[in-house]
Length: 252
Image (cartoon, rainbow, N blue to C red; front, side, top):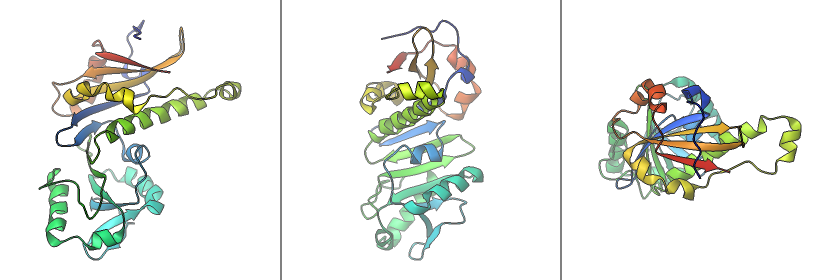
């Protein structure tokens, strides 16, 4: 069901904007408007992450590879400090340190290449590490590039991210309103998957809440196939929002 906005909304009228460009052949997605904390709290919990490029000083140290790493128990502290560092970051998740200790010199070289070139020499997935994700973020480029072992994890990430924002928005109401609502509106990953053709072209997803005439949440989807660099989206954001959206997803 489609709703037409009665008035033009500016960028600040939305709850969140995220740019997404998916390459499902090579199993990676480029995002802009996604923080490390948002990523980590919106995907499946990870046991450990191996830091390939970072400025974090409180990680554990693996003697075999000379790489620092962060355990699940230390993840909260890592996320808190990393947000203040404003440095490029590259990591892969891994199951246990014994898997890291089994990495060959060639595999370690591939990890270094990955952190330097933002792309794998062979594959971004290492059988010994059993990594589900390979993550790279650039502060200057305002982008995050994630290789997914399972590309459908991207829709899980975005649905969890938006659902958490909606839950927080609903919780910000008055006490009696919170008591009267049994659940917050949610969007399912399978719904987002229907709009994959748009994100394969490069698309801006804009989440907002409309209170009148009937309160609901929605996502405006705008294809941005002309943008090669994600950071340019934010320079043109208000102009982009003046364009008609390609699709509207109602969340109820």
